[in-house]
Length: 125
Picture (tube, rainbow, N blue to C red):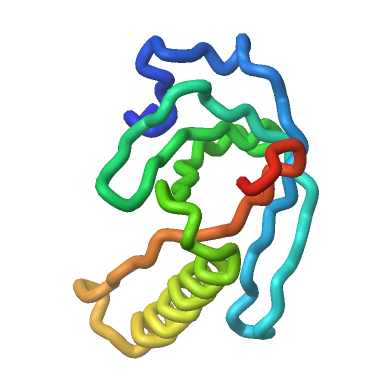
């Protein structure tokens, strides 16, 4: 179990109520967004924060995956900016995987998968 999957004693996943959310995955090879309904448990306290963003950990209940959600501290970041960032990251991952097919085995860079989660019961989230 890695550090991101631990609750550091702040919150126990069992004690956190589930929330419905929409997970949006950008499929770079098709240039489309794919939506699916997911169940999440969102920690009550922030995981990390900086000058521009705050991060909070969530448990994707159906898969057991622990993810880190980031949200701008300022309200001036639009939802479109988040979508564009995820789209660019996913296109970068596609380019990276195509590059790796021709690259020597020692050269295997990776991009982290990024998705958009819309928390349905939290306006402006």
